[in-house]
Length: 339
Image (cartoon, rainbow, N blue to C red; front, side, top):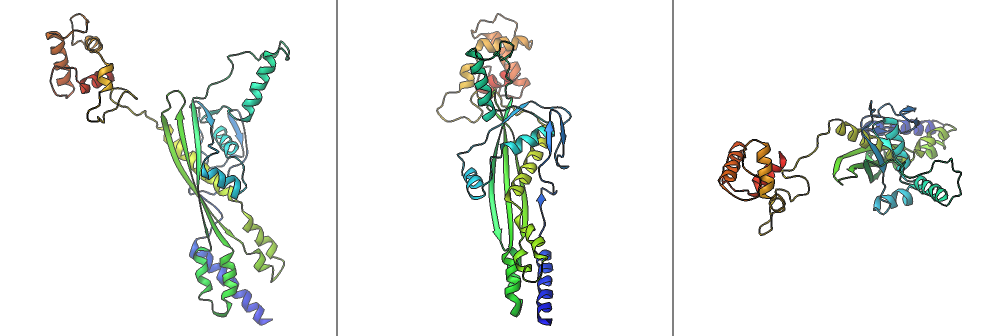
């Protein structure tokens, strides 16, 4: 009897040491401990995570697009037997009120089916299923997951120093499993295709599966065993919560990126021997027109070189810190287009 009590005491000591050495915790969600849950209806929500960012007004409409061909999706659905992340993300987005969610999934297929019925004359004339009612998605958010799992961790070292009771402590060590997930969210403007925001989040969860071991010593093992069943889904949900919060914080202070000459017009990193699309697209007549608007050119806008044009270009170049050549070079064309 005393030997059994000694074993139990050693086990309790091992558990305590394990928790102190490895920093075991239920859930670490970017510093918080709240999973995703609750509901949303319009701009209101109930049961949302207390750490979820919230906006007083929405920034636009949003669709969630999950790439089911990526390797992470196969791990999510195959190894962990978890469903699509789209419903989870859509719930968070609506609860936050930062974006209005538009459906581009299975529900949209049903919507198009209703429109087909209306077009065929099968629906009532009062159904109001006419064209021009769907709302465009201003942005698309694309999620992804990076998985990491470490079984045992620092607790495994206890088994080597526990003498004759190493097997007992080793059983505790072997039942510990630390799961981590890192997630990213990419926010893309649907009209231009420009990525406007990107965010990374993470979460960590340590399962302490001691149920089977404690079952040897008493009925309390059943309760302990329940803690070992924490699903990986909680870690993923927490990581996406962290990602989304980071993204919202970023877009609250959003400022668009600028490229001299405009986006997609060639950029400023020239390649030797390549023609400059910015200069080619911006004619001398365009330059004269812009210089006239700036009050630097007073002659006729004819697209022809002359003293007045050269003088106006030189004045503009000097005022903007450009090499004064009097010619409409690429740098000058880009600067004029940016004005």
